[in-house]
Length: 537
Image (cartoon, rainbow, N blue to C red; front, side):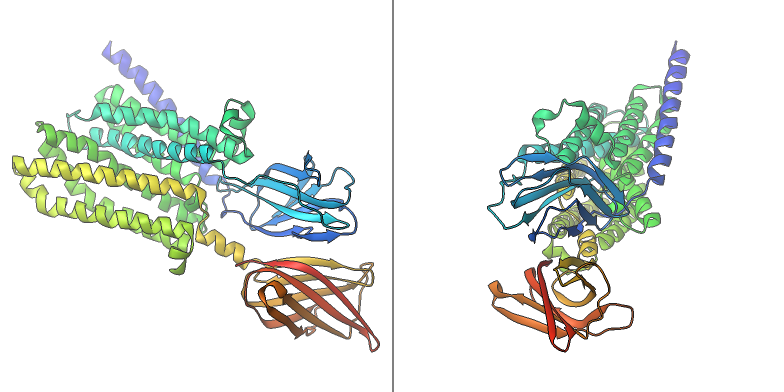
């Protein structure tokens, strides 16, 4: 009977391992990019047009997949936009109907390759501006809280559950103290993983929690890169559960495969795994995830074993103590490199929400590493020698470590809602562009980078019917009366490639500027065209 059960569990384990390997291959070969940011729109935000455009275009810092596209008319009527094309990083959207005069809102929601939804809206007017229609941009706090809670419980399942199963199989010897907690943690993960997938679908489509049961929500969530994370996580959790419930002879290989699945799950999606260079960041996330699971997963079983003073507690502690130093070294090195790639500059640590969360995590880690060092070099030797009071003190210290680990899980789950400084820097480096069209002349203006500070402007000057215009002189004028800034006038030069350029230009503050281009067509004729342009911080 035992042999039959062993063979059955072996077949199940083999099947799960095959699924895990397939998921690993597919997840590693999927393209990944940084967190998407909008860098250009047509029409420009706030533009006033003489007539309705035939199409709209949104250009992002990376390729995206559209989720929800809506045009809100001046009377508040929403129109779903379903006809679109993707060309590289630009989303071209067909305008399905003629638009009346007034201010319209183009609302968009797309998903980045890192699996995180990105949304926004822009205003444009036909004829003359009117009171813009009301478009709710309020944060859905019930959904956001659910996403955060789902993340935390998924981390508990992966790190404390799968990591705990690995510790029981490889470090605890014949001891099974703490197995109930580890099993409960795995079950938490098995519940949290599919729920997190549903929450992902809700967030992607901008839908409330009440729509969770709709099939389209689950299809959308599964279609994102986070879908791979959930599938691999479920496989890893299943392998860990089998290592606890199956025969002892299979416990170690199943637990090892589950631990590897934790690393693959984390590397399949998310800000860190989506960063460039891919050959470095994905392996770093993989190693980082395995290191966390090894360390955090062993804490609860080890703490229970020391508290109950089981026969194998000292041996368990000895194995953990000998292995934890290289694990923590690799874990810390991988985390440090990931942090440098994500943050890039020290100013971003306090200047961005992502950086501030990182500072909180680093503070918790300093406390955790200090406590772990005291445990390792002050208490472990005496505990291994059988000092009962020291073992009790070490047990209490391990309990504090577990609480700090849970706090770190909470901080890490908050990163789900904050683009990393790396992605913000990529977006900030992108130019802002505007097309200025008048009857006598038109221009395509590009300001690089599109944020406040030193910039360069490039202009293509044409006639009103898109023909060549051989201007004698071109002057760029930037003004921002609401900030008390006098017009900045700079004469443009012609480098010989058909464009006009203004170098060494400084835009002092971000916000909406009015750009005017003065074009000297002949000795007796000057054409002036202008439009608003938004300069990023």
